[in-house]
Length: 260
Ligand SMILES: [Fe+2]
Image 1 (tube, rainbow, N blue to C red):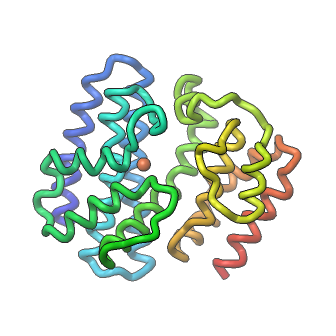
Image 2: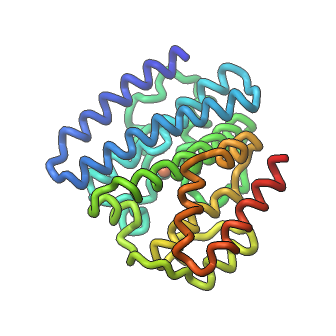
C-alpha cells in the first residue's frame, strides 16, 4: 500500500488547505464531514476487495479510488457552499477534473490513472451501463458500493448529533416531514432506485438513500449493510411513518433473499 500511503499524505494536505480557507462554520462542517467520509469509503473499499479476494494491486487501487472519490467536494463547498450538485456542479465530473489538474495520480500507471478517474467520475451517477475495461469496471463498482455503505453512517450521525444547519445541508434543505411521495413509494415497492428529482421530503430522501441497497454490486456489500447498526437506525426511523411495516419488509426480504 506504498502508493496509497503517499496519496493519503497529499490528500491530508489538500484537505487542510481547503479547511483553512473557510471562516463559515457550516462550510467547515461540510469539509470535515467529507474528509471523514472519504476515509471510511477507502476502508469499506478495502473490506470489499478483501472479501471478494481481489489481487493486491486492485486492492490498493480500490483504496485510492475510495479515498479520492469525493475530492471534488472540497472545492464545491469552497466555491458554492453546498453539497447539492443540482445547484452547483456534478461533483463526480468535478472530482475527475480536480484529479487531472493536481498531481494526486502521478505515481500510477496510465491505465490505472484512467480507471481511478473513471471510478471517481461515475461514482455518483444513477446507473452505469458501459465500461471500457475490467479494472475500470471493478473500481467503479467497489467505490459505488463503499460510498453507499458509508452514507448510512453519515445519515445516522447527522440525525442524532448534527447541528441544525448541518442537518439542513445533509438533507438538501428539504422540508422535514414524515410524508412519503407516491412516486418514491412506488419505486421502493418495485425495488428500484429512487432518483433525486423525485425527492420532496426528508423521508423521501431517506428512502432514496435506502433504495441504493438495490444497486449493490457485490455480495459482501449486501452482507456488510445487513449487519450495520446505521442501516438498522434508518429503518427504525420509519416508525414515524404509516408505511413503516411495508418499507421494512421490502428491505429485509430483499437482503435476506440475496445474502443467503
Ligand atoms: Fe460522492
